[in-house]
Image (cartoon, rainbow, N blue to C red; front, side, top):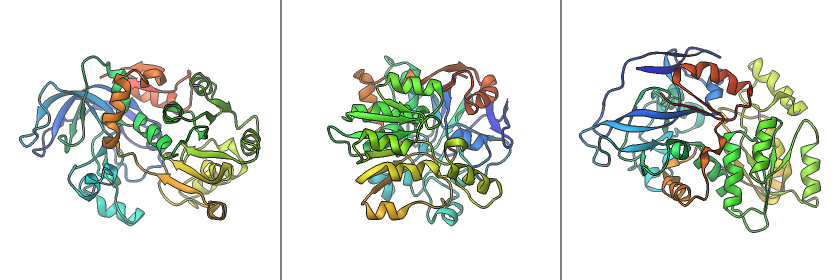
Length: 389
């Protein structure tokens, strides 16, 4: 089959690889009908995610048609149309039973390696390094889905692929980011990053009752889309974000702040961002937490900082004195996607949101390598890429 594979920094290729096969009775094989390039895939493309190996199949936003089912899988049948969560979960362990599917104790076969870095292991993820299981991703013609009786959700024929594809990751992630904010009527929510997850967080914050959403970015197309969703957009290259948010909130700060950027902010977003970039380049640091620092300072006393941007290691100079003395709450997670799927599918069916609003580029797998570059470099108005094998 054809698949997008990783061969080093800035080197994604479309090449022929062996077809997947059933390896366990709970597996399923799907024929991929749509997949997407995620912002977190760009961390792999930029070479900042450890334990990638040459030839790894990338991608974790995937849906398709079931073409083969393992002997122990009674939940799916050939012909079912499904969306596959990017988090792989057994559905039976301590965490899965409590709805924390992204903390699954069984799905990462390399959990000991992950524990050495993080103290314990999260769930396995599709197409996201051998630290998180080494599972082949979904930017391919076919994909093997482990624990397929606990993960994928069947979708009705009345909805298009593009309406439901983002249930695999960015819609649940953006919704979770807003849900973490415990939004009350009248609240102001500030969101850093107007990429696909940030756009979903904007829409979700309004769905959950926010009165005002302040969105921070500098890319014209992203800013325009955020404005179209009803957000007040600030450009960090044009004004001081802290001063403006304080001015907009009578000096109090936002009720909650969402970091939808993570470890690779724009280097020109602040002096500390430039220092962070130098430290990472000289192996004196692992992450660049400019946005997290700013979100903490811009949050009101006893507010919430919600973190869904990807961080991989240790972050420097976080203003914990500010957080502790002002009573901030931190909420963060790899999204337990399975927990959100029924609720969000219902919202789509009721017409409350159509997640396809973020799509700007559609192509085949063979165009994937070039579109990784287009997406990374924010060229051609690119916000979200959907590939149709």
